[in-house]
Image 1 (cartoon, rainbow, N blue to C red):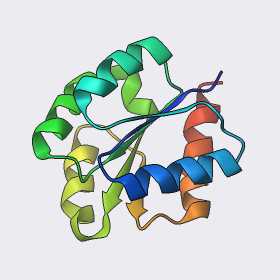
Image 2 (image 1 turned 135 degrees about the vertical axis):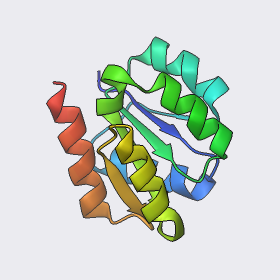
Image 3 (image 1 turned 180 degrees about the vertical axis):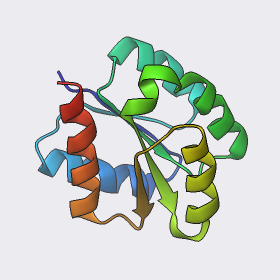
Length: 122
């Protein structure tokens, strides 16, 4: 089973990413609004992909960085809002994160990043 976890408080991003993933054939998609909801889901679901919206509050991003280190770092895809791309991506890339897409989401680029992550752990 290829579980995917979306972490965002933005309903539009949750709906859009869920729709794109379902249309691409992914069916086990879960959402969480904050790290308190996400942490138990990460350990229970053992997701192949964790999608994180960088519009989350800074303290949430800090909590997530602590948890999503090591092997989980390789399965994390960040969605960066266009207005904060440079600073957010630079900060996270300095910590070793490598998977990013920009919001508004380009379907083709998003699915390419998803497939790259999911297929690397198959």
